[in-house]
Amino acid sequence: MEALERLVCSGLCSAQDGSSYKTELLGLAANLNEREGRRRSEFFSALSDPTRVKILELLTIREMCGCEIIVALGLSQPTVSHHVSILVRAGLLTYQKKSRWVFYSISKPGAVEALMRFADEHLEGGRR
Image 1 (cartoon, rainbow, N blue to C red):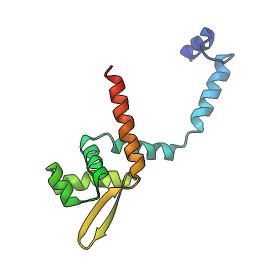
Image 2 (cartoon, rainbow, N blue to C red):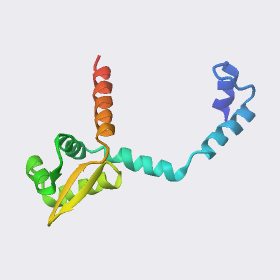
Image 3 (cartoon, helix red, strand yellow):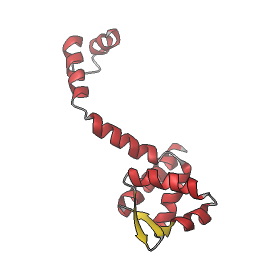
Image 4 (cartoon, one colour):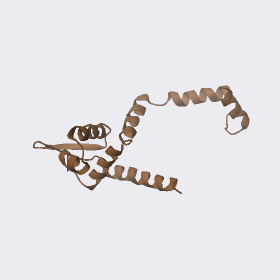
C-alpha cells in the first residue's frame, strides 16, 4: 500500500487518494474471469514449446498425418502425440480420422499465420 500511496502522490496516475485507488484496482481484478484466464494461459502455454511451434509451421504448409509429422521432425510417436494433443486442447489444431490414420490441420489458419507474423515482427524489432 505504501508504494501505491507514493505513486498517487507522484501525480503519475489520475487517482486522488491511495485508499480509493486501491479499491478501484481490486475491483478491476475482481472482474477478471478466472476460467478465461486459465483457458488463455493454456493457449499461450501451447505456443511456448519449440517442437509445438515447428508442428504448427509444418501444418501451415498443409494438412499432415501424424506419421508424416514424426518423419518430418524426426520425433517418436509418443512425443508427437503428446505435443499434438496439447495443440488440439488449446484449439490450435483440429484432426480428422481417415480410415486408421489421423490427419491434423490448423483450426484457424489465418489466426496462426497472424500469430507467427506477430512473433516475427516482435523478434525483428527486438534485435535493433
